Image (cartoon, rainbow, N blue to C red; front, side, top):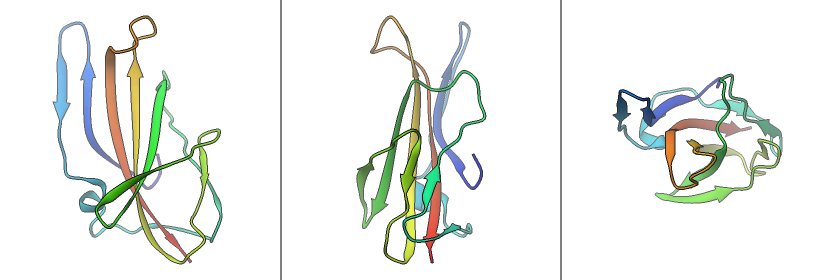
Length: 115
């Protein structure tokens, strides 16, 4: 995904599970250029990866707390007010038969600047 940084993740295979833990979205984006957008602009989240995750969640981070952002068709509207906003896009590949079994998960951090 353009403009994102891969954060924590876990991948499982028949022989190996690999997990990496990183800092949070705001810390990961420190010193990185935010994506410039217009007030209210529709932002589409696209993963160029197969298979696609079957569980996704987008959170906006403000003042140390996270708020879930409604994703409709993998898109959301940029905030109306000017400023820099930080996000965590969490994705998970869960088992289609056993719903509480995760095969992999990852989160991506990104920041937007509403102009």
